[in-house]
Image (tube, rainbow, N blue to C red; front, side, top):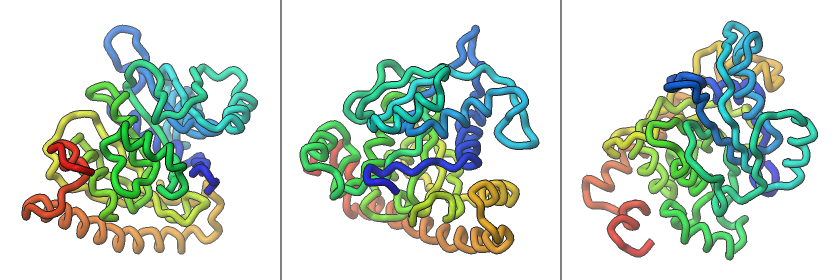
Length: 295
């Protein structure tokens, strides 16, 4: 992982994310000729942009057995790192995308989007400059305690998403089970949540287990549980082969064993979250914010 939290998204995982994003409301499935509009915050070098184009291009598809032919949505990207922007433009000279060089949290693009797709930066609280932390605290209700950067990133993405739109994000597994991210979990629970996919630990070149989550911007009773699903075996194999794992069989077996353990941890934390609320226990950051309490 780089100093500013950037880790490139492996191609097979980017394809899985694009497929999850468009699972229900596919590009072009709108009234009239509108293609829809997608935002890619944390554009990086364009791995997720490429996956969107593959998904919508006849003959390429997002997997060897499926080739779609959808009109590509209008794409908008946001990236704060000038070097990655330079690399993106060099490798995508004719890309149909409106790219913004900006801090997504402080200067988001105008308008709303039908989809938001992002592998957000995983940056710890202590790695952020104090002035920047204060700015984020003022802007975002989820930026409580020693928040990680992906937390307000999610809140900002939800803000620019149209009602009924879909938001697909990569999260570290800690987002679903660490007490410090309880406010984020209540924010997620307030929307309609698809199954959360547990990714193979080898997915990223970093010591961070990750999940892929898709959320529909549709108000939902916040008490429901978040559940962790295992990928189908052929998807696991596609990912492991795509990132160059040698012993695929052993890695697949290890994946399902680790999913079982992690799923229990997530269930336990869901129970703790609900118990805190039902028993009048410690308020989450969102509850304190809504009630006017000090965060």
